[in-house]
Length: 276
Ligand SMILES: [Zn+2]
Image 1 (cartoon, helix red, strand yellow):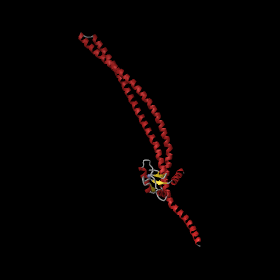
Image 2: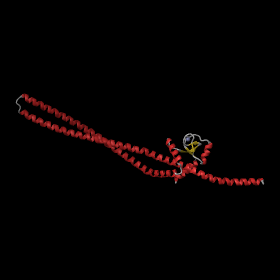
Image 3: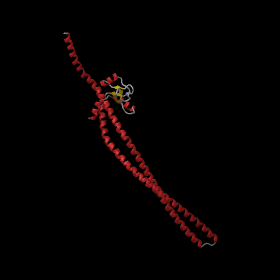
Image 4: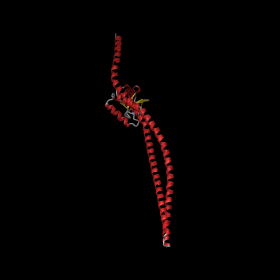
């Protein structure tokens, strides 16, 4: 009789426990969904971080090259302007030389009609002065021609460098264009995934998630337990706490760094979600 009662009790206790489990699982599922959503959100955001890191260097490289090309073009422009000025100066010197020569001819004619030696000498002085002026003009011309040669060398060098930089720029622009085209699709998919998961997370958890993420240099707000330690700050997690985390009954944060902790099971479910 006593034996029979025990058997009945045992038999009754077991189905009871099995009945309780699904009810508990229902409660757990909400939290579990939230935890999966949080970890998915973290995975998605980490991927977006990676995309931005890849892009982060290229736009700067493109910008630098664009600036350099613009600078080189300005330099060439300045050299060309100076060359024009030199040519204008040469033309002016030629003009002056012609005028001085003309004036000398006039003086020489005047010398034929002088009344005395003093007048003749005075005109001679003027001719000498004009000749000196012509010499000065010739020197200015030589200087300008030298400068033109120098400028042409500078222009050639700058143009060659511009060509090289433009080729580099084209390559970087293509590379960036490809990455943007490639990552844009990923980003749109990731952002949609992120939005989809947000509906399973209440506002206060979302706010907390964003706050923690902003405070962490690596952008990690939700981490897994790795070798009995927090995957974010590597502090040991007591066994009892690890058990609680594994039960998916509530959102548990690391006592040291404040990051939300999940177990491998949640991480696996999040990974499955991301594959879809
Ligand atoms: Zn931690």
